[in-house]
Amino acid sequence: MEDTKKSTNEKIIEQVRAIETLLIEKNIAYGDSATNPANVFSKKSPRDSICARIDDKLNRIKNRGLNDHTEDTVTDLIGYLILLKIVLQDERDQPTRQEDNGVQDTDGHSEPDCRHTWTSSSTSGEPKKSIL
Image 1 (cartoon, rainbow, N blue to C red):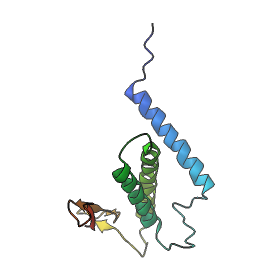
Image 2: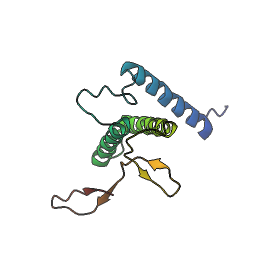
Image 3: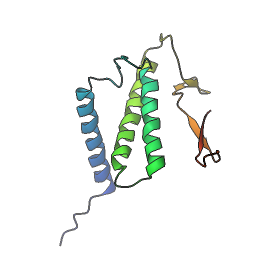
Image 4: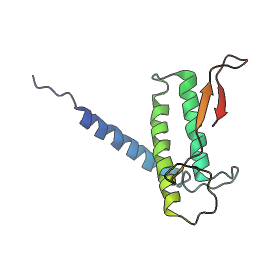
């Protein structure tokens, strides 16, 4: 009997292609709203909006754990991280941008200002979110 087990490289290609297809389908369906938001209700920048969505996905995983019910959340999170990379690259490609909500590292690169830490105590027993 021939071994038909996929290699890790084949699995990576399969997963990346699935996420690529999902991102393109959603981008078409939502009219490129992640990188060019309509700003009807929210006036946040694309970066801030994506960071908020990433926070939502991480909170869902934190609250429900990693299981069959949150596997789609992991896929969505990967998609939002890719969109964040695109927005960061777009920002780097536009050096005349007036607003910079990022934090510059020692090399002068701007990173998203969506970093959070969790402290271990609160009155409700739940971790408290604090922004760095």
